[in-house]
Length: 236
Ligand code: SF4
Ligand code: SF4
Ligand code: FES
Image 1: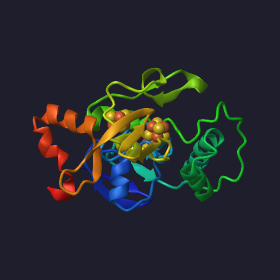
Image 2: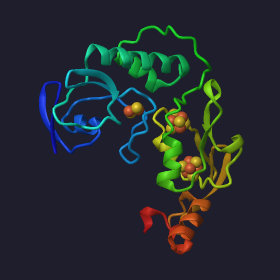
Image 3: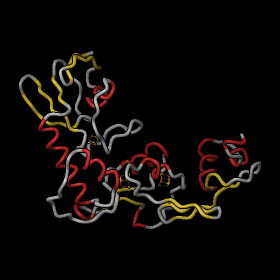
Image 4: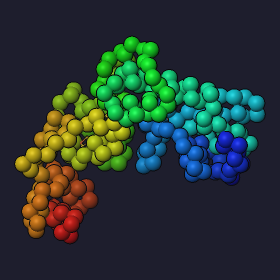
């Protein structure tokens, strides 16, 4: 264990534990966009910055990646931290003017004007990569990826075509922080990433619940008879 201070408060942490986790545990608020408790850090958004004073050497670092060390001083709301956060949000607002979450965070952090010319309007996608990581590491399917470079970078299934491997589970929709990924359900059909999935109707209550494709996938990977999975959670 190591001792450090956050905004002057002495705290204890496991050596190497991410400062973000330590700070949140101690009740300090640090905004994040690409961090998720189930997936950990990826260091993409840089919104989680804090200032660290390590033996007189001051740096602004990404708190989701920076490890807790003995005797460091951490500041979550210094002038430098606020400046970096505002810059990050200004850039995001330039690129994602329609993303309500970014509008809200920008307002909260005092960003009143955007001085940057957007490379491309990305709609609500902030390229945080959470959907890609969720599909790969939580669902175990890897139907999504990042493609293109620089301003052309975007997220989606390969070649922007309905993915063969996507099971229509909707986990990427749930994890997306900005609501960029559309999922619709109509007359027993779910559409996500341009792929249509027939929904299974529960044999007991007749309610549509999960895509048949997803049930078959769960049945195959977990060795559970598909008939069992056809019954919705409420009726089990
Ligand atoms: S809906 Fe498709 S792309 Fe999204 S997490 Fe599920 S399998 Fe992956
Ligand atoms: S679609 Fe959502 S989760 Fe995926 S990269 Fe874009 S903002 Fe992040
Ligand atoms: S939350 Fe740390 S870089 Fe995004």
